[in-house]
Length: 147
Image 1 (cartoon, rainbow, N blue to C red):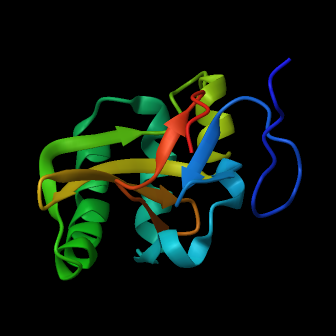
Image 2 (cartoon, rainbow, N blue to C red):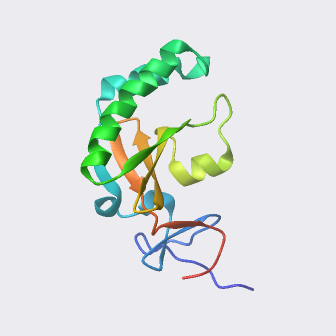
């Protein structure tokens, strides 16, 4: 039998996807916020995207996402990141979220934007609250047992 992974934050066993930060395993929901929190966007803008989510492809949805992206770009450019053009995903996948999405991101994820700095990619998660979380290049996710 393989050894059981224990979350470095909560101390509970980790089943499924393991996230590593500085070689330590974490549940996705236990990742240190002080490491990953990068700012906040308007809750009104996020709600506009959520209300249009079921449409999937529409001019209104595109405009709502663009408004959120402008705020995220401003914050991320201040941190030295550049946005990959047209690089965003609506989450959870509508109408049926993938299990890995629920496990990896939780129920309150609305958008994911892709950025890069010094040749390394990073995802920015936009939460329902408007909170932005950076998934840094240093963070790896997956079933691997490397440390």
